[in-house]
Length: 209
Image (cartoon, rainbow, N blue to C red; front, side, top):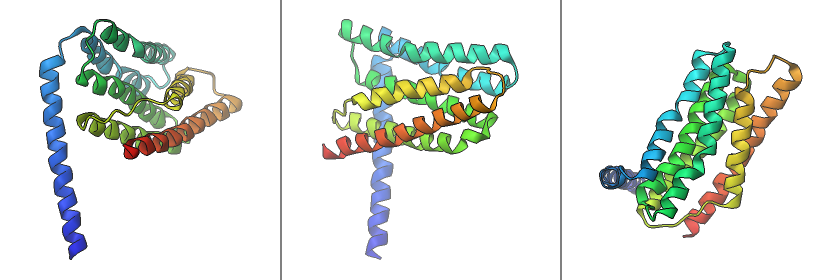
């Protein structure tokens, strides 16, 4: 019975903390949502869903696949712009610290889900990436509200870069070929493995603090 009571207490605390975190996030939007860096991040957030949507809609449409590829690359490459402007103009906010990595996670998650719909060969890798990305973002979200600074490691940056390269490779409307299919599958496997390693590194740093 004690174990059950402890579990109920844990669930109640988790529920209370989650509600408080979301309330703080809403207040952040009201206070800081209108400055330029955050506006850029919010725009990236909206567009981050489009590459995946284009992939699902235009599975066999070459033009839509190229458009999805172009948008994915542009959104991925503009990752540093909002942060640069915020630091240059002294407009770094707690909201920006949450939104900026959130856009990266949503871009990756939305796109890999779309890829798994049109290519079941990479489904396992996609599921691994989804779990890792969600856990990392949730931990970062909780850390920010508790004033815990968990800086992005060099491995995390390398993981993000290689992951974007692998996903962009799968988006390209390449002609069906066994070698290409194998290369695409291995690209996703490598991206999934790097996500797992990055998750363990992140959680190790997080819980040490």
